[in-house]
Image (cartoon, rainbow, N blue to C red):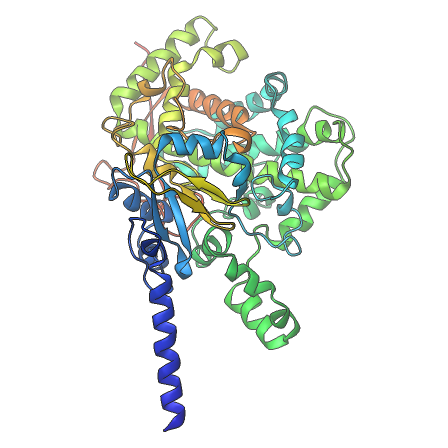
Amino acid sequence: MLLPLCLSLLLVATVVRLVWHGRHWRRLGLEGPCGWPLVGNMLNFALARQSYGEVYEWIYRTNPGLKYVGFYRLFNEPALLVRDQDLLRQILVGTNFADCADNVAYVDHRRDVLASHNPFIASGDRWRIFRADLVALFTPLRVRQMLPHVDTACRLLRDQVSVGCFEAKELATRYTLQVIASVVFGLDAHCLGGQQKSEQPSRWLEWLAPLFQPNGWSLLETIALLHSPRLGRLIGHRWVNQSPIFFFLISKLLFPYRYVPLNLQHWFRELVAARRTSGNNLLQWLAEGKRSLGQEELAGHATTLLLEGYETSAMLLAVTLYELAINQDVQGRLHLELDGVGQGQDRDLLGQSALGELRYTEAALLEALRLHPAMQALQKRCTKSFTLPPQKSGCNGKLKVDLGTVLVLPVQAIHLDPELYPEPRQFRPERFLNQAPVGCRFLGFGAGARMCPGMRLGLLQTKAALATLLQDHCVHLADQDQARMEVSPLTFLTASKRGIWLRLERRSHQ
């Protein structure tokens, strides 16, 4: 009798504690949804019904008039979702940036030595050091020096293109891997054109192409990386590592997670060790930079440049082609621009001058990125307590943000806010034509000191590919009756649930 009674009391106490924890913000006088035990407000994400960006969009949309919303992440962790543009600006580029400069991205530096050099992941003072190394690589002059790599890949892409159906993300990944391998290492990745069936598949494709695509582990990986460092800590916990049984079950069977898989870590180190000591590539420029870098730091930066350089650009190219396929009027205007610029450049759209004139094409890329941001939310952790203004205008009661609190900046929700973008789900490149986004309305590349350092290269390679593909072709849906693209609820980077199937047709220039 005593044991069942004790277990019942323990269960009741646990439930009461979880329910109490899920009312944290209410007790502080904040408006927002109550948290459910264990899952907080992330039930649909935990059940793979919605992506984390869609959950944050729901919280954003259902709390109009609030500057920020108190809600609960997984395991009922209290967090704040920021809605107000002025507060977003303060956090990203203003007075409160130093109070929450660290991104929420848990990577165990012992298991992921190379990934820990990524300035997006690094925390404390390390991110500033690593980012400074990379920023020097992407000045306008340096990006112009990368153009020959992009030009070569585009000519291979043109030879590869054929009329008919294709999966846009797969083709885009082949192209961006070809560019990034050349830009970073000066190597031919053999991802485009000329490969015979008897040849071995490109290791770049075999190992890197599936890396960020939805699979059976994706949801747990996303939870560990962005939403719950507890899971990552569990994998690296002392008693797990010291117990052969627990280590095998958790690290091998249940969750063999590394941000950069071990085989890739070994391969990247080999590529760096075998690099040429001369050449016009990023790795050489890093080695010649102001700060003296050892082999491990070079390998860490090479990992960042490769992984961040190909996947997000490939997805941007794929979703832009998709949006053009379902918005033929926009595609028609883009064709007019390509034809007009091409007439003055002897049909060569890959030169620096021609690419600079493709302003509508670039606007189409930015509009696609607004609709399909690579990161659906930015998540910052408070590293120094600070004060937020009252939750509602005209009300009293400031909020002290405690050390360790997570602040969510819901990129997808902001991009789809009708008060910021009229008819937000419509694809309208004109929004970005001849005017830069004001404030923090557009966060496709982040903002401030931690925004994407490779933005210029990303836009350059996707714009060049778009011009190459559409100069002589029109793009359509492979099946006119197919449903709109579904976003995978599993991955931390935006990915399509079932692929993006399109069809190319030769176009008449008359």
